[in-house]
Amino acid sequence: MPMLERIAGNRELKQDLKMALGSGRIAHSILLVGEPGCGAGFAARCLAADYLYPNGGPHAEAVLRGQDTESIVVRGEGASGQIKVEAIRDARQNIQKSALSSDAEGRVLFIYGAQNLNGASANAMLKIMEEPPEGVMFLLTASSAAAVLPTIRSRCAAYTMAPVPTEECAAALRTAQPELNEQNAQDLAFLYEGHIGLCLKALTDPAAKVARAAARELCRQAQQQDTYRVQALLAGYEKDKDSAAAVLWQATQAASAALRRPGFDGVQPDTAARILRAAEAARRAMKANGNLRLALTVCGMEMAAR
Image (tube, rainbow, N blue to C red; front, top):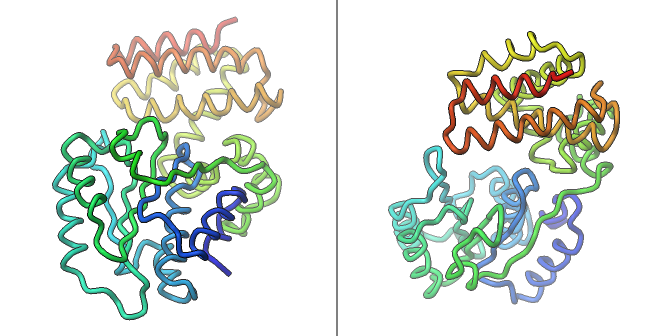
């Protein structure tokens, strides 16, 4: 079975890519676009596995794990995630110097987060794409096609990843996490609106688990209009902007879910609307480098308003 079949949902995308591979007319530069958590990175690895190892096997599985020798990976660095020109130059040298395995059909260069290519790194990437080495496929992912520089975007065949329906998302979660019960899987799929990657992160990433737990408690206290406890919880993040942002983002997800399904996780629509407005205002203030303590104080007051 092709590795592409492991992608949840996105039937037309899978069909188009399988047909392109089967006909031998697959583009040498492909851009997979999807919101965070939609699985664009996983889809890129599935496509790479089918391109490099059409018959599957251990090497194809290694591609999915990011451990295959024919896969060269470039990611952004630091808080901004910017991809530096040095990373592209290093990748180019790796492509030219490395020897092709006897059982691989080619080589793949992954560019995760192509929207983070700056002018210099994009120009370096263009030089490779305009004269691609034989057998090399370029697989780029991005959160938005519009955010990718036009010079790069115009040289790629673009495909869009979509969130999957709740039922399919829940099934994929239970496959990945067999110990997860059906109700929890359904709730997570609903909460993150079919973004499998976000669901799995909430289950496995320690920081995401802590942020979600704090956001659930924040929403619970806001529902009870307990101003003191809401303020006390948020005050704990006055010196940690990144953690504050993570908790507020999780709170917006919970509030959105409660608006779509009144009573979700114990939150009613009127409270959910307050939480959403307050959290979004605080996040905007934080992005504008406003006073963190003031932003969280105002946020807490509005969340628990009577």
